[in-house]
Image 1 (tube, rainbow, N blue to C red):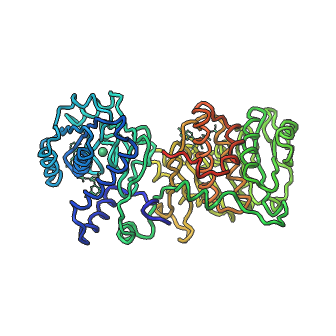
Image 2: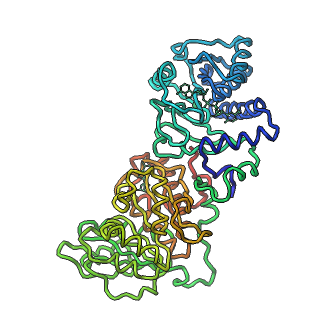
Image 3: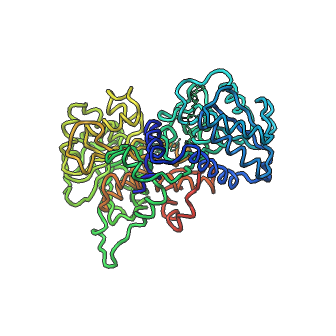
Length: 524
Ligand SMILES: NC(=O)C1=CN([C@@H]2O[C@H](COP(=O)(O)OP(=O)(O)OC[C@H]3O[C@@H](n4cnc5c(N)ncnc54)[C@H](O)[C@@H]3O)[C@@H](O)[C@H]2O)[C@@H](O)CC1
Ligand SMILES: Nc1ncnc2c1ncn2[C@@H]1O[C@H](COP(=O)(O)OP(=O)(O)O)[C@@H](O)[C@H]1O
Ligand SMILES: [K+]
C-alpha cells in the first residue's frame, strides 16, 4: 500500500509528521519553498497565463499564507500580474519575511475590493492550522470572494474548512480547485466539505515513509480508496479457459414485490454486469413473468406471496448451491421472516434496503447476537437513514466513528452510502473484539450527485452480490463495486450530464466502462 497516497490524517498527525521531518534536519523554510514551487507548477498547468493573466493572492498569518506568498513571488517572476491581499496585520516569522520580500519586488499589496478584476484567486488564508471560527476581515474576505465569479485555487484546504471534521468554521471558501499538501486531510474527504473543495488533488512533497509509519503506526484507521489502483488490480475478473459456469459463482437474489418490481430488475442487471456464472432470483410468484422477460438468463424462483404482493416465505432451497445471497432490494416491509432465515444460512450474505429495515425490526440485542455469530461474511449497505434505523444509539455519533462502532458490534462489513461512501470491515488480523478502533475505514473519494436518484443503490447491491459470489472478500467486493459504480457514473456524466445517469443506463455501461477504463477515469 502506498502510505502517502492513501492515508487520511488529522491535523495533529500531519503536524507530528512534519515535526519529525524538521527534527531530522529539513529546514522549515526549505520545505515551504519546495511545496510552494510544486503548487506554482501545478497552478501553471491548470491556469496558464492565457487567459489567467491577473492573479490575486490571499495570504493569511500562518504558513498557509507563507506558501501563498512564495507562489505570488514565483508567478510575479513568470510575468503574471500579481496582487496580494493580507487581512491580518501580524504573521508568523517565515510568512512575514516572504511578505517583506514580495513587497521589495514591487508586488502590490491591495485592498480586498481590488482583487475583483482578477482572472484567478489563490486562497492561502488558512490551512490545517485553523482552530476557531472565522470572523472579522477574514470572514468578509471569504464571503466577498464567494460572491464573485472568479475561479479560486485553494492551498491545502479551502480556507474556513476544519481540517479534521470538514465543516465550515463560520464561513469557508468555495474553491474551484483544492491542492491538498502532503497527506490527505480527513476533513477534505468528508461529506460536509464536498460542496467547498471543487476539484481535489494532492501535491506530494516526498515525506519519508518511515516518518508516516512512525506517527500512524500499524493500525491506522482511515484510508482513501485509490480509484486507478483498485480497478486495475481487480477488474475484469480473469476466468480459466476451461471454466464451468458453476466455477464462476452462483448468486441468489431475494428481491422485489408487487410495489417495487423495478428494484429486483435493477439488482439483477447490476449482478449480471459482474459476469457471475449463475444467477437465481427469488421474487413473489406474480413477478416471475416480468423477471423472465427482463433477465432471461436467470433462474427465477416464484415465492408464495402476501396479499400485498410481497414474498411471504421462501421455498425450501438448498443454500449450499449458492456462493452468495443478496437480499432486500424492493422487498417491501410486508415480506415475511426472510431475513431471519437468511442470517441462519452459512452463505456470504448482503442485506440492502428493506432487508436492512427488516433487520432493524429484529432489534439491537438480536442483531448483536446473531450477526457476529454467522459463519460467513455479512455485508450491510445502508444509507445514513437506514444506518440510524439499524443503530439508533449511534445517530448522534460522528459518521465515521459510528461506522466503526457498528462494524465492531456486528462483525459485518458495512458500506455506508452517500456522496462520500465509507466502507469498514472487521479486522482481518485482530481477534474479534469489541473496541471500535478495530476496523479500518475506506473512503471513496470521487463520485457524482448524478447517482442521487432512485435505483442507483439497487444496481450497487447486485454488483456486490455478483462479486461476492465469485469469491471476493466482503471488503474487496464492497470497495471494488463502489468504485466501479461511481466511476462509471462520472464517465456517463461527461456524455449525458448529471441528468442522464438513470440506473438502467448505469448498469448497461458498467462493462463498456471497463474497456480502456484508465482513460475513462474522470480526473477531478
Ligand atoms: N512548513 C511548511 O512550510 C509547510 C507548510 N504547510 C502549510 O502550512 C499550513 C499550516 O500552517 P500553520 O500551522 O501556520 O497554520 P495556517 O496557516 O493554516 O493558519 C493558522 C494561522 O492562522 C491563525 N488562525 C487560526 N484560526 C484563525 C481564525 N479563525 N481567524 C484568524 N486567524 C486564525 C493561527 O493563529 C495561525 O497563525 C498548511 O495548511 C500548509 O498550507 C504544509 O503543508 C507543508 C509544510
Ligand atoms: N450526492 C451524491 N453523490 C455521490 N453519490 C451519491 C449521491 N447520492 C447518492 N449517491 C450514491 O447513489 C446510491 C444511492 O443508493 P440508495 O440510497 O440505496 O438509493 P436507492 O435505494 O434508490 O437505490 C449510493 O451508491 C450512493 O452512494
Ligand atoms: K487555504
